Image: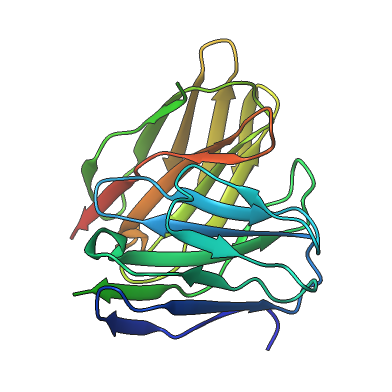
Length: 113
Length: 109
C-alpha cells in the first residue's frame, strides 16, 4: 500500500523508558518530518531530514533524536521519556520542492505515565 | 517570532457557505497550505497558494493576499462530512512549514 506508515498506533510508556517510533514511506520522497500535535497548539516540528543521511532540528527537538539511514525510514527515539512528551506524533514526507504538499502517516498516540 | 492565527472554532449550517480566515507573520514566504484533519486522523492536503488570488477546487476555494499576510479557505455547499479541523500552514524562508493551531468547524443540520 503506497503511502507513509507509522508504528505503533498507540503506546503507554513508563517515564524514564526509551522508545522508538517507526516511520516508513514508499513514495521515494526526499524530505521527511516528525511533528507533535497537542490540544490547542499547531503541529510543531521536532526533527526533519531533507535527504537520506542528513537530519536537522526543528522547533522542539529536546529529548528526541532521529536518524535517516535510507530514503524510506525515519525513526524517532525518545531516550528517556517524560510526561510532557505525551502527545500525538505525526510523521510526514514530501518531495521537498517548494510547492509540494506533505503526506502524513496516521499518527502515534503516546502517553507517558 | 513566527505566528499563524486562525479562529479556534466555527459553526455553520449544512448547505451553507463558510469562510475560515488565516493571518500570518513569518520569516519569509514560500507558499501557504490548507489541510483538513478529521478527529483522530492525519491531516490531508486541501490547497496551496503561492501567488495572490483565488484558487478554486470543487466546493473548496482558497485565497491569498501576500501584502496583507492573509488567506482564507471558503467551503461551499457544506456537508456533514466537512466537520473537521482546518489547518493553515506557511512555508517560511527555510522551506519549513509553520502551522496554525487549526479551526474546528462544526456543521449543524
